[in-house]
Image 1 (cartoon, chains in turn red, yellow):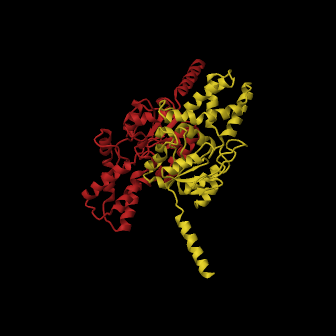
Image 2 (image 1 turned 60 degrees about the horizontal axis):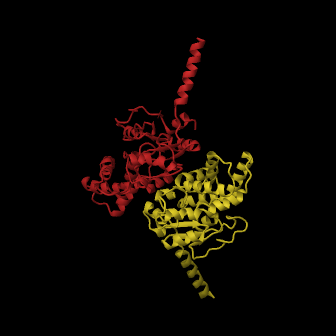
Length: 253
Length: 253
């Protein structure tokens, strides 16, 4: 019994030592930190009421988000020159409003709607969790959004970033290698000292394949009440946490 | 008298209207926001005492800073490939310690000394002034320092940045045009909506020549008690302020 107890102690100390600690922690933003879908539904419903425009805004928003990956891939494949996420949002919105039979919107209306992506509400645990992590680590976004969009989101939601390096700094979109490994280059640390936190298995899978540490936080209602994807970690991540605050707890911050 | 009073009112209203307001405010950092010289003297004096190394640290620091522009110019002229300010600080320190007869320092000692540039104390008005400006404007550094150095400085001194775009984002050093005009590109605003705040006439002169707004804040002891340069604005700037807090006041923040 004494020997077994000693062995167990050694084994648990060794497990704790094996749990690596990152130097820099970066966060996927849409979905992982901010509730883009509910925020946009509120924003567009309010806009429709004030402007007297009737439309199925939820359907429009879901269709808009469905254009996200295809529009990024056009850039990633070099089919078109670099454009920011704001510009891609604008271009896909213009096509979608016509397809959805919403033909009464002015240029200013479209600008206003695109700007909805700059005013997204954080999940309740986001700001308290980041504030704790920031005391011990360098924290910033690792998002497909451009710097100005990320800065607006941070000011709107009170996200306490140490730095904001958007996709336009790298001129690459996730899941390109260059954006994941760009963070370590700026901070002169190895990729294995950088941890990506995300609610999306594909994002974390890419980060892991490029040598970053990874942490999964499920956001089971990001895509609405009937979400079926990304409910669980589908890979072996360094951390799995129920919230940003839980992650801070696990990292001793 | 009545007519003169009316004219004076019109004229002062029109002057107030002419005073332009920027969208994004960026700050030179060394000297303008942080007191690098006193901080480094304290840091190295303490280091020398602990390590038992006797040297004229103030003389070393002044010589180190004198290497600043020449080392940047080597990069600006493309005489050597891009290197960060941390790397340039390290290279010039290695030469200087030998020249100053300080031959007892290990590699770790040199790393420790270079890291002194990451631990510089802000002037007393810096943090309260930035905190006020941040409520109304997007604020960030516009410095020759690299991102990681600027992030460390911000964490050390509590500088409340919205974004940290270092010279390594642009791969250009001031006074190259690309670093001044890079900010407007990221924020999709014209250069005339970006204001540089600095304690140095040459920096502000360059910014002005590239179309930025400018604000001068004198730091008459930056280079020590016998400073003779940059005591006054030597050009026509949009704002002249006695402190960052005074600038916030003038901008209604």
